[in-house]
Length: 80
Image 1 (cartoon, rainbow, N blue to C red):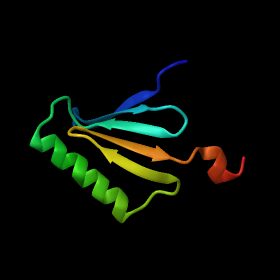
Image 2 (image 1 turned 45 degrees about the vertical axis):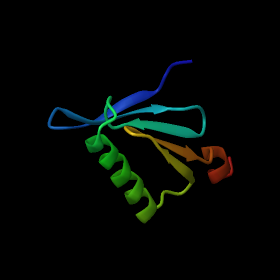
Image 3 (image 1 turned 90 degrees about the horizontal axis):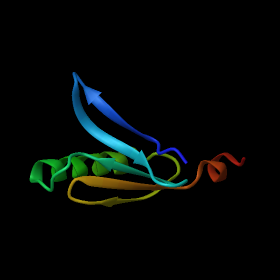
């Protein structure tokens, strides 16, 4: 199975990398080190998700430089 991953960039700078984790998760990397700067970005992103919920998101699990987003599989949301 091919790994699905990508990056979100701004003016050539990588803001985050993401990888699809199975059929119901996304793992977002905000950096590759456990620093306060990256942890603040994790907290900010998690806070924004709480403020503007996305349908199907079950929970978020934060690390020092990562955020895992657990989702209800698409089939269950759409009724397919």
